[in-house]
Image (cartoon, rainbow, N blue to C red; front, side):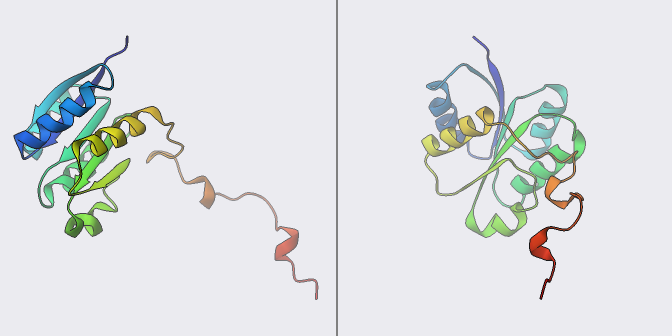
Length: 146
C-alpha cells in the first residue's frame, strides 16, 4: 500500500483535524500540519509532499500557493486551495490544481483532494499551453471562398 504525504496548512486547528479525519477514511495518508505560511513553506521545501492543502485565512493562502509553485516548478506537488469568496480574484492566478470555496464541509475538501491526487494533469507550469502553439497551416473554414 502506497502512502501519500499530505501537507495541511490551516489557520484553524479544528478545520485541519476535520479535513485530516475525512481523508484518513479514504486511504493511506501521512500528514504534516502547519499553522502559518512560513512553516508550511519550510515543510514543503524539506519534504516532498504529494499534496498540499492550503486553508489559510486572508491573502496568505493564495500567496502560499504562488510561492510553492515559484520555489520548485519542476515538482509534481499538487495544491488544493480552500478560500473565502472575497479571496477568489487573488486566487485565480495562484497556480493551484483545485479551488474550494468556504464554507465547505471537510468531506468536500477531502473529495476534491482525492480527485486532485488521482487525475492526470495535462498542463503544467513548465510546459507551454498546447492551445497556443502553432499547429500548421490554415483550415478550410478559415479561408474566405466568396
